[in-house]
Length: 150
Image 1: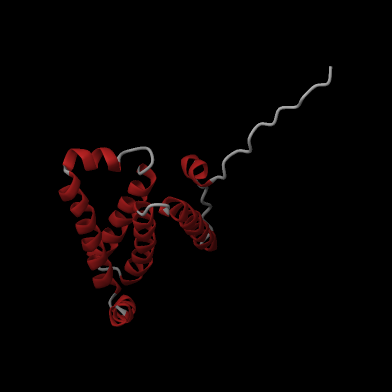
Image 2: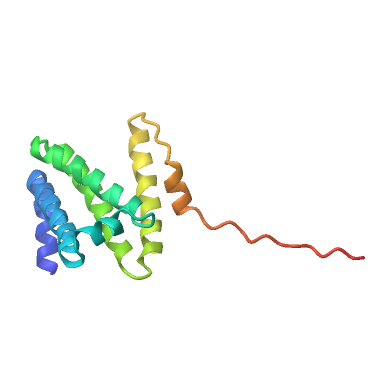
């Protein structure tokens, strides 16, 4: 596994277009395996459920962007969007593990903060959508009742 991870890093730097294309292909196969295991209708309901929808949208939007720049043979775009897709895919994988949803929410909030920072360097202001804020926000404190003396 160590050799594979080291060669992946080298491949990412030397040939980001190939790395991004292979990553997108692997992600598509990963998603297709769940459709094969659970059946198309059950998996579609699962993917479009309220709990899974943010992860699904994040994974497929970064997949589309990464695949677009990779097929257009853009080296820098493949590197940037390949990393973004890799991060989104890892968040999605973490959300499948029991207890991993909390880890995925934390990773998602850090990922969006990094994205906001990078876009801010280019003068682009990025506001986090409300549904992501609601997903990553801590739960509201419980209401406390006061006893009145009487």
